[in-house]
Image (cartoon, rainbow, N blue to C red; front, side, top):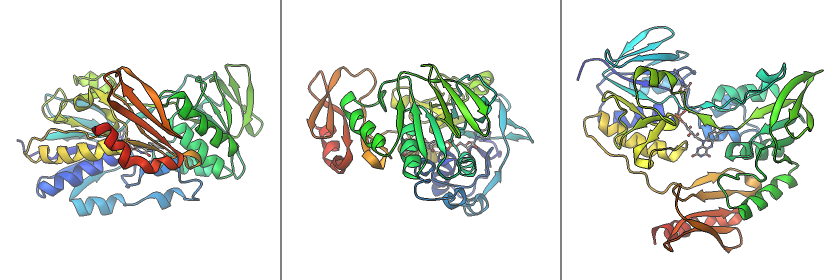
Length: 380
Ligand SMILES: Cc1cc2nc3c(=O)[nH]c(=O)nc-3n(C[C@H](O)[C@H](O)[C@H](O)COP(=O)(O)OP(=O)(O)OC[C@H]3O[C@@H](n4cnc5c(N)ncnc54)[C@H](O)[C@@H]3O)c2cc1C
């Protein structure tokens, strides 16, 4: 192994947690962290619940980059963006300098998908995926503002709940006919839709935004259905996608994310990946853009980087949908599992596979308290 440092790209949960886990095994090897952001630590899930709690962006920071770097003996290069990789020379190229690595950890997350929109205000559509985006959202939203959210998925619904709860007038537009359509059985979407409607959220189904234009001091959003909405902000929550083009150009195997084997190693033996950028062999070649997989992956990676090759084994990881108007806890079946959703009691649904086993569940409202019991259904 060369004397070059371990280089970590990205200071989100995946980047910082990998470093913390590595340091539990190895306090000596130099570690360099490169990140396009400030490097400060913050809990990303709080971005979609912070408004109703009245939290400002600085109040979400739970670790200053300089303090984290000092305590973990890390050289941190903030506001530095990587754009190319030379696998043969083990070099990461950034906008300021070239970094040589012994091992490289890709933890640069994923980027919001941008819909190609027409209109002179298309570039004013905001996505909230980083701390700085939330800071911008807080700055731009005046009390009582009208907000149009594109996307009724997990993040769109969470923002709808949070912003409506904070007193904003919220509209949600989605090509589907119900919230969380890709995740929930139809009967489970219903109480969520009703609870958010009761908070004042207005749904626009079977449609999407085609154009955003400036209209005096507000914005005019043209929907595919022909409807036209006047709002103060358009928030896009239609999903994330890892930016793998430059990694693929360098020769790394990429698909929906950068592909990693059971030890989080990419197709190059010196490069590893985890977090939203990774497509995990240990998860049936899926991306897992959630917190719990990062914690599990970072633990395994910390050991592997320290010379103890460790497979990552993901447990069942239910996802909590942070919509307090009607909270949900989901454990979804593996894609392609043959079976059907079955209601068992009020706001409880189980996914019954054709072989008779329970392979997933959805708990809604007060029934989210049944988590421990529901986990046993999966284990049975
Ligand atoms: C609003 C919201 C709410 C969420 N709520 C939940 C939840 O309740 N539960 C849950 O399990 N998950 C939730 N998630 C998902 C979860 O937060 C993410 O899966 C996780 O935080 C991703 O961490 P990451 O470190 O992989 O990526 P990120 O946090 O995106 O970090 C990536 C880092 O890489 C840097 N970077 C990117 N590109 C470059 C480059 N080219 N050069 C240098 N640096 C670069 C970025 O600046 C950033 O510092 C939520 C996500 C969002 C957006």
